[in-house]
Length: 79
Image (cartoon, rainbow, N blue to C red; front, side):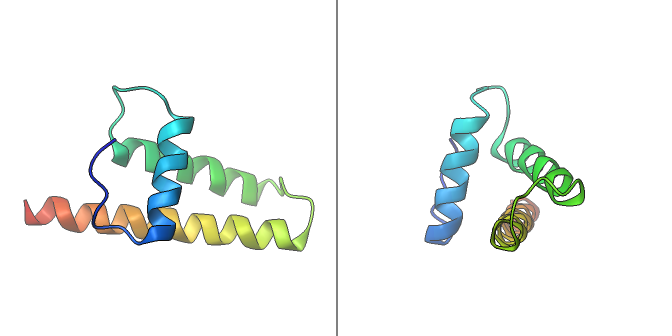
């Protein structure tokens, strides 16, 4: 996985989870985050949750993924 020193602790945990879920070494961190975001958004829109608490966790997960993608885009623009 790419260096994630620029992420908050919570974001680092999500990055590790996403990296374990998408095991392909051919995918970049950006691609993994993007696909995780697509899956999470689909789950939210399709009501694939059992409780309001689960729905809120899904919304938080989506927010974290979007934040990470935004940070990554900013870093790529600087390079």
